[in-house]
Amino acid sequence: MELFNKSGALIAFVLVSVGALIACQAKEDTVPPAPVIEAVAQKLTIHGGAAAERRLREWAEQGSVVAKRELGMIYQSKTQQRGEAMRLFEEAARAGDSESAFQLAEMVRMPATEGADERALSLYQQAAERSHAKAALRLASLVRGADVAAQPAALK
Image (cartoon, rainbow, N blue to C red; front, side, top):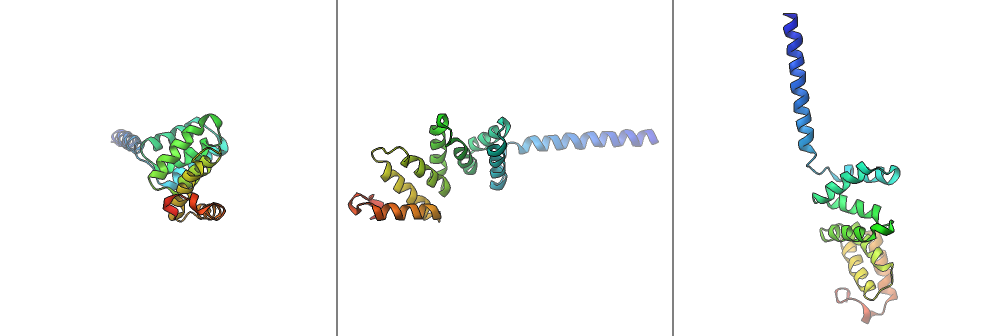
């Protein structure tokens, strides 16, 4: 009888373990909440690591706006990944992320090219409309210092 109890317990343990592994595999396809994504991004920023970057990229590909923003924040300081950062910020800003709109505006203004200020103003306005304080301040300072005739139609 004791042998049966031990083997029954072993079988139960194996079944529970297999169930837990299946559940973990199923959860890999889900995007975690924003604080989890931000924690992974912070870990990547501090410690580096291909695994953390790979997870962020997977979540971004699954449509996570937060993951796109966090990857963009990491990539924007890397010259060879600047274009990728802008693309990620653009996608996240279109989805309504105010921080991404602000960061993209900051990147657009960096190289002083024709039309950059107008595009940046539009992005600052988008972020400010979503209560982004730095964007509102930057927008106010740019509008105050700019010629009213040169402002985008959206700001008039």
